[in-house]
Image (cartoon, rainbow, N blue to C red; front, side, top):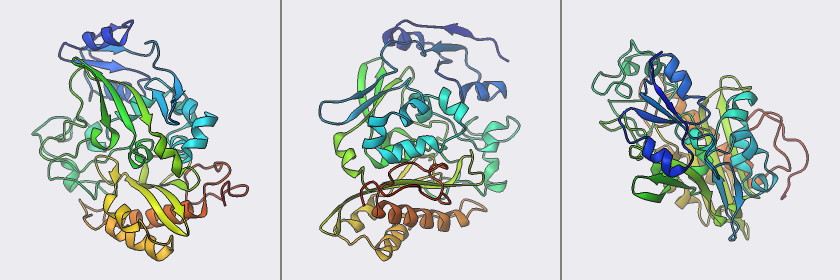
Length: 352
């Protein structure tokens, strides 16, 4: 392993200053970063440990009914927070469907947003990967790519973003608080991650030294609590990254859809917000036929990046199923296999 400096700052301001030099990165739980360092993909010169910074481990209910979640809150802690789970059940379901219980106990909210792709060619330092070494090429294009992107990809990169947590956050217009060299600013989560274009080495719009300090969910997002679901199709239900996933949230009134929020996961280099499909559903009756039309619109621009045409149909189906289950109502409790389309939901619906 490459030799590096280790620094533990006492404040957010000190942390930002400590990353001024080239090659410095932030260290939280390290559930992704340390793996990348072990295989030689990440080779930082300095690790800036933010795990002990004051105030970043709080879950706060805001006066307007929204929530503010500190970047160092553990995934499991947030998923099991009763007030948060009641306000944003599909976010809790997404968190509980990610990784294993041990990793959820360690992984952090901020780190989850910034995890790198799990593309095998990105992890293999002997393979050509524009995301790892700009200009080197993309071996995934002609390789094993059945799990790669079907939306927003480019000839430079066909990798997907691996997060479950980010998918419902994108659907619910979550806001990311960032501290940088010029102070604090807000970024809409849907605008945080970048599509590859010609520069796939840049995963996000963050600048050097930018530190995520919190995520906010607006009060308006809680209006979807009674009709929202996150579904995730994966090769191993106990713990695996999604083949495709979908977040669907509805606000129903007088038998019609008053508002809707939709996002897909594992289909692109970022969580994929389905705004055209949302617009189609506003004012419509919540019927399977309407949901199928919306799914067609959501995947209208999808195209295979390799041996993955099946993902387009899977994404359509998982979105339709998520919409049907959201229309039926949020369950009273999360199933034993969270977000799995094969789970049988226990108990009565909470808001039937």
